Image 1 (cartoon, rainbow, N blue to C red):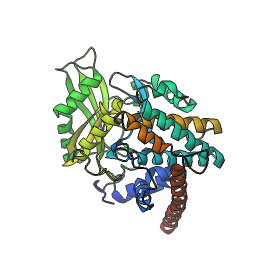
Image 2: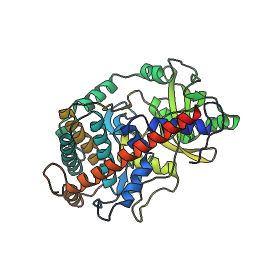
Image 3: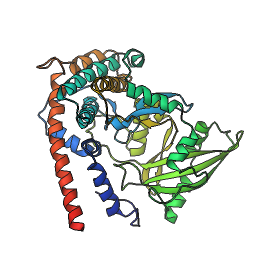
Image 4: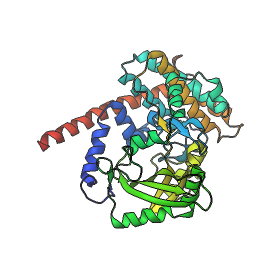
Length: 402
């Protein structure tokens, strides 16, 4: 892996890589989430025709459970949408459905649910996804909302800046607390972040979200290298704390500046996409997750493409590592419907029925479409073996260190 951060205590490339590998080893579901490249390698090794070929649309590219959740728009309205579009690309929508199914089934097995529940989950996913494709604007009113999703949305509605400040900034109001997650910048990084905040596109984004006057002053109070997530460890990632003056009273905003990387899913042949990775991510976000896409802009830091978005207190991932048998089926159908809605919005009405028929194709049993069951169970076996081998390597490295 090409590690792209300066060697320094806490930011040393080998330290970050070890941290990433340990994070992946923390559970089978963490392994599924953190090994997107392996997922697509395994898909590529499957016989031709294992997955149906859907109409090319923008897909998430990494539609695991943790990448769906509550997302606020610029006005604070909340929807359950895709939260992370780093891997977005115009491609076969079946990739997203399989990725989500693999993630949900792994989480269900972690929760020690019996295998029959996983079959019912995949059946619910096929039904929910098809309903989302068929009625992309109204599906959330018609599907049975899961308790986990409803609770996530309710929690998001009650969140304010103080909650975000407490979680990310330890309650500080004028600087980013250094230590476990935030680290000092090199002088060239500081200059690059200052220039980025002054970019007209970034300025328009901050003012639009903060309801600031057009002549408001935007001041960068502090910026730091941010150790966050899993796939972004070792890539450029920064936090910027900015103050907006010019409205009724000064207010703060926290910006997430994240290096945009190449997509891993194979793109559809002849797909028209921006060649700049950051612009690709923003375009995909606007197609799949409008709440998030309208809060993002593309830019460059130290010659590398980055996305810039303001973090909102209402943005919450769905915490569904443990759930009951009934809730597992409901959450599977609900999240699949949300995914179908994101895909269906991009499809012409004439092509939707054909894609629904392909997704719902009858298999050898009544509980799941044949292709989805076959693909997900094959992937489950490969990922379980890969997870144990990964943990073995980590354990051996720890023993060798002493």
